[in-house]
Image 1 (cartoon, helix red, strand yellow):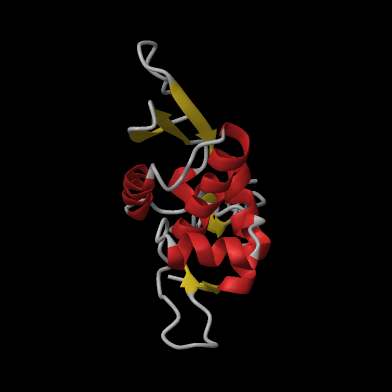
Image 2 (cartoon, rainbow, N blue to C red):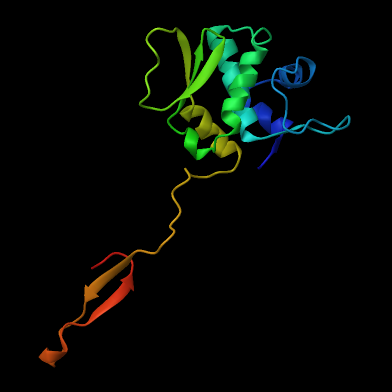
Length: 173
């Protein structure tokens, strides 16, 4: 897991150094992955923690949610994110129901009609994190097997030999 330092978290979240220290150390709302072990050393954060910090900023600034009261909700959201891979979160949303529990919803999954929810789309946050953690492009599927096509070469003079079929890499011509 790639980790970044506190000063990079400030840039990615928009938090001030005092706010980050308040949320991660003093109030223990969202703990760093590796706390600073001594004075003068910076804490280190993984992408899930930085994503959760970004979501907490949105909850506080846009929806005026008092984060200290909902520390357990933040812990449940962290648990949801901890088992997921970065690419699997593209297109998902975090739904917070009644400020009591939360769930990750896929792009096609509707919010239940019988519950009020705050829905936070993750794509914009993931885009910023991909830049901040040094992922220059969206993660594409790796090519596991080369594409093999068959092409016909020029017909040979000897008509009984039949066509010459050769396997070539790339797209079939």
